View 1 (cartoon, rainbow, N blue to C red):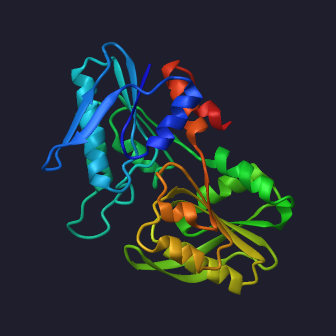
View 2: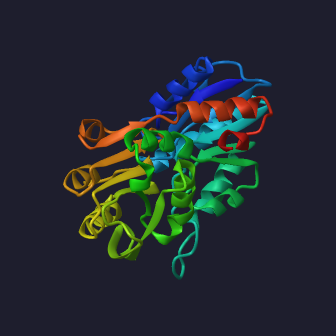
View 3: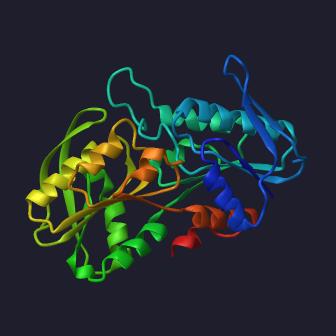
Length: 313
C-alpha cells in the first residue's frame, strides 16, 4: 500500500508511517501565485491501495481542497483503491438544519469527498454519529477512548473518586462509554447549558453529584473553550475537588489557549488529530496524546481486509 500525507498534519502522518514501517509516498502539494492548489504524485500508484492522510482543520477550506485534489490525482493515476484518512473531519458541526435557509455542510463535504473519487473514508470521533450515513461509501469512524482511557487510569488511582462529566446532553453516550471502560465505580454528571449563538454558551445547571470528586469532562471538539471553562467553574462551585478535560480534537481557535490557562481547569488533554500550534505547545496545562498507533492499526486492518471494530472490543 501507499501512504500520502497532506500539509494539514505532517507530524501525525509521519508518526503513522513510522508505526506501519512504510515510507510516505513522494508527492508535491503547492500553490500557484493566485493560491490555487496543485498536487503531483511523484511515484507510481497504478493498482495500489492508497491512503491519503489529511485533517480538514484550519485553514479548513485550503486543506479540504488539497484533500479533494489529491484524491482526484490518485484516481487519474489509476490507484486501485483510495481511502481518505481524515482524523479531524471539518464542517462536522453543521450536521443538520439549525434554522431556516441554513445548509447541512457535513453532507455537502461528504458528497465532495465521494465525487472526488474516494472509495472509503477513515475518520475519528465524528461530531455526530449520523454523519457516517452522509457518505455513500464505506466509512469507519474510530473512537479515541482506547487512547484517552489509559491516561485517565494512570493519572487517577482511585476510580471511585472520579465523576465523568458530559459538557452537554449530546455527549452523554461518549462520557458513559469512557466511564464504563474505566470501571463500575465511576459516576456520571451532565452539564445543562444553553447556547444563544454559535461559539457562545452559558452553563445553566449541573445534573449529578460532583461534591468531593475529581471531575473528568470528555468531549469530541474544543474550539473556543468557552463551554469547557464555564463548565469547569460551575463544577468547582458545586464542590468538585478538581476538574480535568479530555477532548479528542483540539481546534483551540482565537484566544482559547489563554482562556484555558485562566480557567478552573487543571489540565486539558487533546490528541494530535489536529496539528498543534506554538501556543498549545507552550501551554502549561494542555497536554497531547498521539492517535498515530490507533489510526495506523486501522489502516493496516483495512489494507488486510480485517475487522476494524475489533480494535475497540
